[in-house]
View 1 (spheres, rainbow, N blue to C red):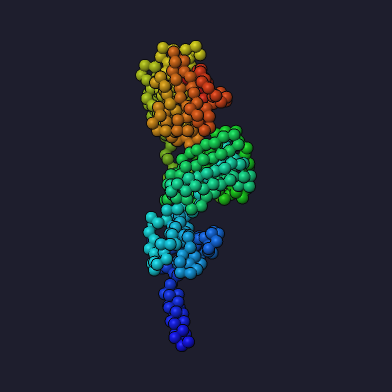
View 2: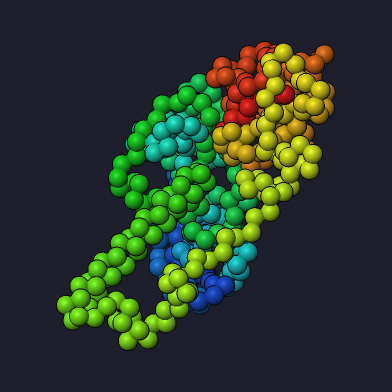
Length: 424
């Protein structure tokens, strides 16, 4: 009996010693001093996902308590995540690798997950202040992990993802009537902690107008480039007008005060030390000389004019619809969208158009185009356009190209978000 008691006491001592030696805390060192947030994501013994309450900390490091995810000395499957609010990135470390670790030194390269990524769906044309009402957005990140978000009317056109690997992301949007797949670059280093990207849907889709609160919380990064430019132009014009109004008000007050004192505006300015230009013999202030303009340079496109014809790169020849003409050059002229003002000559028998940089006409600045979107064949003097199975289709004069379509001078060709005019 006494021997049995001694064995029992020894066993309990060993258990207690083992429990005391299993310290579930890890010292974490940050890349630099600052504010951080950490939490645990794991699956319990029944396989149910669990998230421990986030902890805020500040400084060069902290002590992380792993006990919720290490109930019996053995860690459950899961991750320790550390969020840097300054960069908007997250570092994720496997709990199983931290089971026997006493210290974890995080580097800047460990923060390789974008905490919040917002993809805003907008119609490519018309209704610039509205967004796509409903869609399914699938994102495959740089680690080949897939995330899915459903955009409904309450989402107001925003698909939001968390903790995606930074880098090149493949995004597929399924909407009523079609599908499009584009590549989106989510950089690790960015100006805004929340990564935001606008995707233009070049199709007839249902839209929803975002609420005022949603509009106020979105930044200029959520706008299409042409919308950003228009907004900056309006803001700049408003500032100039306000400045002139203020100067006019100040000048009016000064004029009234000087007149009441019997002083002219010129005398008042001279008393303030303002040097006025001396008048010429005729009493008039000479106007500044007009800037010198080179007549051989086009003021619109900046290219030198042809010395014989006087034409430049933006000149368009008007040709009858019956043929190309002896000096005519077949071409597509951008009239609307990202490639507005660009001119692409059709010099080959087969011209491939699309987002791939290796195409004869590369539209790599238009995310709504497919890699090989369409092609134009030259056949006995005629030019025929064919859609190459693109996601968003090819349109001529507003009608979708279902098969081959012969182009005539003046036809409007839409590829992605860009409209071209076909000229001979």
